[in-house]
Length: 492
Image (cartoon, rainbow, N blue to C red; front, top):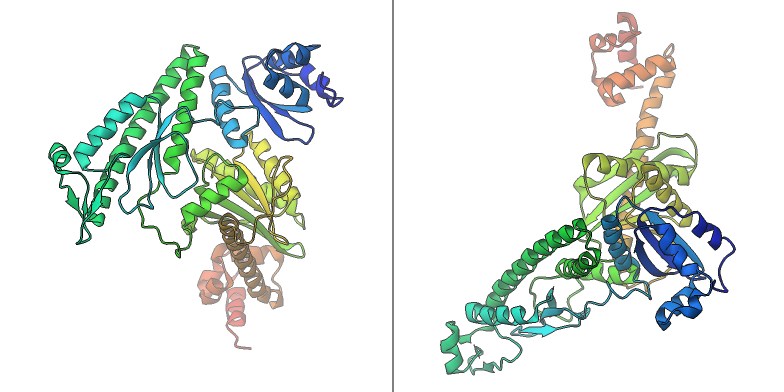
């Protein structure tokens, strides 16, 4: 056993189920250092803690891992194929230091197109950088990829890595010498703008090839898992995840302008890196609670898509489960209501949920997902005082520079949620003030008052009603209806 093992670790292992699932190994600081899958969680995890295991393991890396384990967490699933996919998702999300299968995509070739060049070329690389280039792949079959690029050079008249274009006095470019231009069948003298049109067409073609291959790989992976060929399925899964990640981050051509502010997609990529997400959060939803000393408690949810407000999908909530001032219970209620509805409608969860608040509010949101028996998406809190990002796990709070583009997009999201909640709160208070005029009408009890508002919906509609229409409400006769109408329309 590792010397740093907590007292309850043996007990955790002893009570693990003999069922498939995923296990997360943690160090003494609570950081996830390894994610693995198991056909039987009990058998697989207990094998790490057999007496003297750390001394007998031949691989130094595994020996070091065993010695660092201080805690563990498991997630039970229904089948081994499901465990296989969940393992990959969690490794992509947490990038544990002792996992390499998913995090190293260098064995596959990528096609890189440098958007900063006046004439972007199509080059092969094994290393993806966070730059302004566009990437396609990864591709496992290098020979087939090279043939495809040569075919694209002939079809679209583009430059590959070995191209040596010559700029002519009139500002146009000669892409190839005379011999090669005859081979490629495309005009060799071209303007930079016309060339970029060619390159865009080639990128569209290449992206189509990537997506076509991705769909084929998914079918292969499912078939291998169905045959219980889990090693083969795991290998295909690695390629699928890497390809999905690359396709999610491709961008269209644009000229480089150092004075241009970063676009929203670049801000989302910087947020992905800061939060260690598996992909840029294209869809984000933010929740905020608003009340006045525990009264008029309401909540808002705003949604951003690709960094921009998606106002058609904003939602507002009145708290129904209790009366009083309890931000945590309010947050648990509205998060539960929102995602219960999405589950019922068969819709996807957002890529990132942002909670206006700290660890307590995040805990309340997570309780909602537990009650729904649903795996939550990535969740963070944003504490306004110092713009501190709070994580739901053991990671320490994060303070990004105030000019960080990822933080700025979170601030816009949070501020919009705050504005939307406060507006709703103000609307309710104004409505309550207008309704209070009924308190001054003699003989109107709580039941009749509620019946009036339920029937007409607002004081404004009630004030515009005739005495005959008011008399249709249960409990009102003709005389009382006439008196109420006169009272509501009295200028005094």
